[in-house]
Image (cartoon, rainbow, N blue to C red):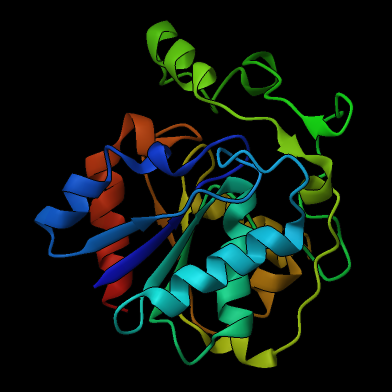
Length: 227
């Protein structure tokens, strides 16, 4: 099966390099997406540009792909469910949640001019990054790209109720499935609360399992294709 892989903030398609061969062993073709403004040289990209790139990848895939989004890009993966509910096998999101209707895509960090640079590892100290060596942190940081403000401050709109019936897998890295369920039950994640085919699965990792647990992540992605 084709699997569309969307990186989170600051990362480009190479974030999935260690996952691709693991997916291939399981019989899948990974399609990593380098989002506009995150490694393609487009400094003025918008949220809508990134959403369009995801839909273009879905449209170009063979058959009905699984769409995988990491962290903030969980929203972009859910765009595929919203705009192509009958053209995807399902969606898997890793360590993130789709933005609530009318909210900003990823307005979490202060911009520097017209872009939001990677803020370093201090904001992610603790469970997010405890499983990353200093060498890995340096390697990942060196490959990051500032994200255009037009992306981070973009307004998210949902259009199709059919998205709620698309199979959705939440892979829980630095938090547990039980914690995620508490947030859902507490009304913090309306998009997941409305999902009728949601499954929560655990992975023993920090926030970036594509770097620290690529084999285990590939197995969970493979399981999501079978739902």
